[in-house]
Length: 434
Image (tube, rainbow, N blue to C red):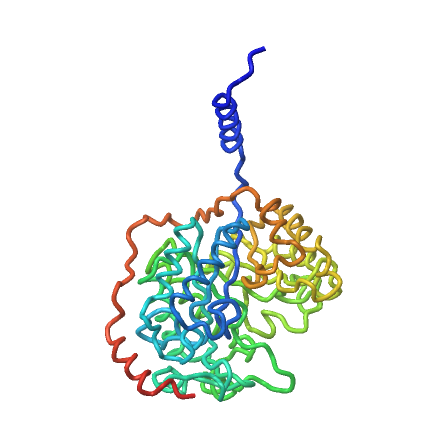
């Protein structure tokens, strides 16, 4: 028998390897996202990391980690508290970027432009995560620039607990927030605008949100609860229209708290016992927004375990799968809870949640909170994703009611917006006084 020479063996190995790679199947379309939170430096940049080179290196490290784990999207917080991780003509630079609100990066760069480019380079989607109403994260402790909107229009804000919020009833507020979001969509090549669960703030025991005067001034015939919901409905509808006016292919997604309403309040609600809900406490009628097609996807935060006694992951998953009204549904996964109780010490908890959600045709994927949770491979879950559940690449789900991005060059300006240098000088002179 003729013994193959070394070249023949190498050729056969190469053919076998190539055949394997060609034959390797691709998963069906599935959204696999990670939230990267900037507020209070939760995920990025790391607290105290103000050097632009270090910031860029760290963002790329996180992006590569998620790409290696099989992810195909990141949801990055770029407007955490009426501030900006990009040169905005309306709001000052974020304190969580440079340490002092209103102070630009030095040496100068545009973090949002950089992050979008690096994300797209890896074939991943970039969703710009914005908080609509939070304006002062901690009264007396936040860095607030002299040109922050709370200084320019103090009449737009209400204090509740240790924070300042835009008054959701104010027409001027609604127009301002929509203008800020439209600016992002117009100038940057974002794939989506994303908002989470912070609409009216979560209730503080024994304290009512201080909007009595605004309610009286409105002279509405609606109950206060319905009036509050109407205020939020209005801004969601306005945002939806403006986003599509700027770029019809840009998605608008909401990530609400896990429970719309409890069944004991509404027969259409879920079999849950949540202390607060979207509809009754945050005044966010998510189902209306889905029915009216104002939003393109919903990503409920199902952060609790399978079998939880009040908000059971499996029951909530089934409820949302029946109530997505033809819009895309991505499940918010609480990987940050790893090790917090017996259920989350179980290495099977997260894999079982993935297996369960994949049983529902109306569920198109998941989003994980949050980025830093992956750093230490909790319960070996990064290995599980990389080697098993996300071992095959997946295309992003199609939203067939949206036109395709024509792929034209982005309208991002290489220079800061008009009047930005004036604003930066003001902020520098004021040193972002608290």
